[in-house]
Amino acid sequence: MAVDVKMQASEVRVGRRRSAPVLILLSLFIVGALVLAACFAGWIAPYDYAAIDLRARLAPPAWHPKGSLAHLLGTDELGRDVLSRLIHSIRTSLVVALLGCIISAVLGTCLGFLSAHFRGWVDEVVMAAVDFQAALPFIILALAVVAFFDSNIVLFVGLMGIYGWERYARLTRAMTLSALSHGYAVAVHTLGAKPVRVYARHILPNIANTLIVTMTLNFPQIVLLETSLSFLGVGIQPPMTSLGNMVGFGRDYLLTAWWIAIFPAATIFLGTLAISLLGDWARDKLDPTLR
Image 1 (cartoon, rainbow, N blue to C red):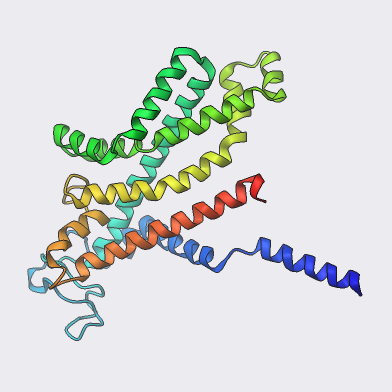
Image 2 (image 1 turned 90 degrees about the horizontal axis):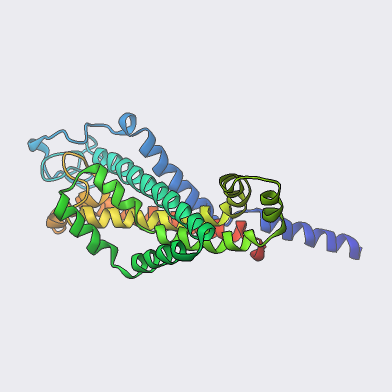
């Protein structure tokens, strides 16, 4: 009898560990919906996001007494459909943030490997750059660069790519130095493997979990940076649209047409919150010390 009770209790604990919390499932649903909207924006959006209809300008959402089913989330000051612009804005913001996150991870990881491999003055230069990047208010740097070189999509993605690289560099350097002191790295090097092979085939797979979790935590910060710069008018420029761009144009109509800014602002809040929760959950699952 006692054995059966212990087995049932053990099964309950295993089931609790394997089942994801409701909040995580909800976050997965939100992120999945955003990804679907980004991938199929051209098919989901009911209108062209740049189409102007001055006869329908500032139309309220469909549930408003003066609203219409023709525009479910209303229209903006130029009569453009808010739902269509929101869907395309999600795609723009996610693509820019994803590209920036990938560039940042690759740049930081490569510099971390270089720092750990060469040591000496190379290590000192990389660590000095890491400290400089961590201490510098990045939004001030971004504003200065955009103001000097003028805003374009390639420059903007590049700016997103150099945001947060110091985290990957610091983590990669520390974990690589630790891995190089282990037997497997020394053995592979002794067998004649080139440094590139040692880092790419043996060390990188062992530190990939930590880098992936860092990417999930850095991604929402890049989204917020992109929306902040677009809100200030130095990010994504018309005729393209992004979430920050929509909020920026809608701030002048908060009292008369609140839906122009509220819907993209709510999307930013829910999306970044969901990605952050998934990042924390992934960190707990992938960190062996927390199992």
